[in-house]
Image (cartoon, rainbow, N blue to C red; front, side):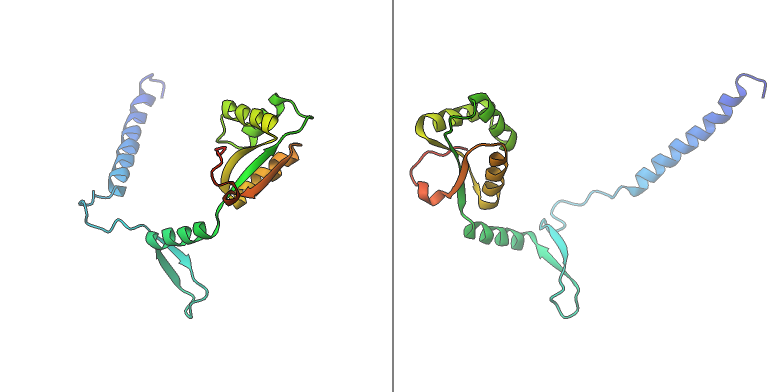
Length: 162
């Protein structure tokens, strides 16, 4: 034990064994590459189906999911989030609120929306699904802004906000 190199040489083989063991485990856990086109490219997801008599698991194809989303989208049309002019808040405050709540708006775009609301009386902030429009509206109202939502079908031919 008193020799300076005795501890280092005994630790070296253990390190090599550990490294070799990890490399072996890694190599064993890797799957061989699958041949191109060998399996279907359709993504599947399992879901509990309590309405089935055996209460088993149903496998949904991605195509079914897309059709369900498309049907939901067709039922739920676009809604506009409208900013109304008020003489209470500064341009900087309104611009900051818009960029904070509506994450996809740049500061420049938010300023243009603020200016349009100031000069025209109202401006479109975003055109989104109804649930998202309601969320934006409530969050902006909590910050003190005068905001409303309306179906996009009422604004045919008008310029949009987002």
